[in-house]
Length: 254
Image: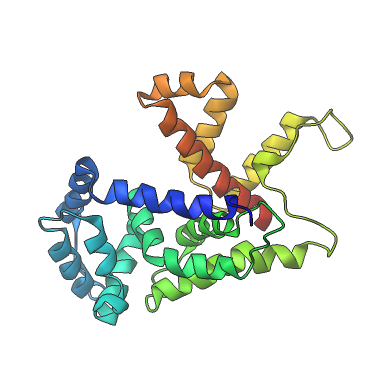
């Protein structure tokens, strides 16, 4: 059995364990309470969110507040998720909390598409698709059963929609494993790469991910980009992997 099929899931778990107690991250999440507003549609959820944010010392508490399996009221859970989904447009950390909430469902769906003779982890594909589904989600039209709806959208984006566009003989290849070949009738490698970036933008890949890819192409060194951004090389590598996953899902959907 290919151990790579479990590496991505394990990485997500490690990242969450680090993130959930990270003090700067907790302060950032706590600051959300400063701009919480109320309206007829989500006031109950915002009150519940404000309560969770007060003296928050573990991000898992925020995840649990949206999970009926952990005792959350279904209406309140959905109302909090609506706010997090809306906030994800301007704060990726809110999106990460939502992804953590639905991660179990995503992994369960991915397991149905796992091929142990292949080294492509379907979990990586569906999580990337979930980010796209999250950014496209219309909370005004779909304010109920938010977690279930996002899982369903991600499954369709990752596995059902691409299969409708692929013939029985075609095989999905991750974008980071594609080779740049000599120029042919379809254009130069960089022209084809530009098409990939364009498709990714049209399918909701965050601008920050696309800018990172541009910076890496420009500098051809993750250490240079890390120095420019004032972060570690490891951080750049992690962000690059996330960006590639997002772009991969977008290309499959294009």
